[in-house]
Length: 322
Image (cartoon, rainbow, N blue to C red):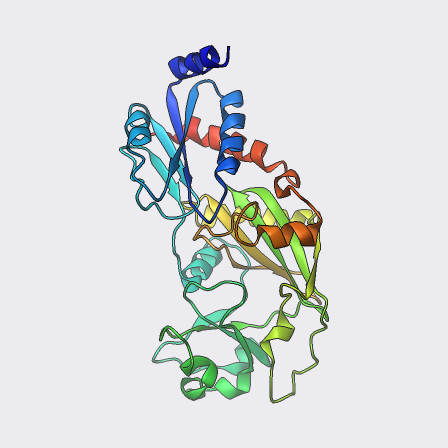
């Protein structure tokens, strides 16, 4: 009976959906769950799963026979489709992300790039700023909090936070947003703007009152693994803001949105969307820790992720397959 059902689905299909598996980023079984939901919803769509570390030649040929939509959390590597509308992860620097988010009308903390002709104005940014790498880092690596006055004019050129940049690329300076005595941030994972996972991370270590101190230990300004508690469900205004990021960077389907709320004003700000694709929280390298922190053996249940993924992928396939 199962074989007959599969034949019927294939014969009625008019479009294809290809889910690209990225080893070490997601479990194959996650995509099987999504594929099963998509097949149930849409007998007019044939669903394939391809591996991104091999050509997947057979799948490539079969999927090339009809209009197709391809979703990959990361950049396409060994798997290169013959045809189709492609939504794949991309390595987009943080300054480009911020520029595109701001251009789309989304709230981002004020920032500037360290260019050769920059005369830094500390009054524009307030007493504290964050010096952040523009390249591809995660979990707060390379971020330093410094006093604005120490960067005034062209003094930033000799500042250790700038000259010590590992990759030799000048970082950006961003206004420090105070999220409260116990620093916090939100991580919202969206697919085509649909939230499929999310939480608020709140530090269990209070932020030092060090605005006037000579040293600004960066660890006191963010909630870090091992020194945080996770809060869920997430407020609606945070989810709605995460939804809107897709309109700013629509060529990437999977956004790992980092959002913060200013303590005094309660305003929300988007920090970045992590478009590279290593944010598949359900089975990434950080998944075991997240399961423990959230006391949730199956992280996909929080937002009914597989059903939501299948639904939005079916909708996109029907409207955009090429």
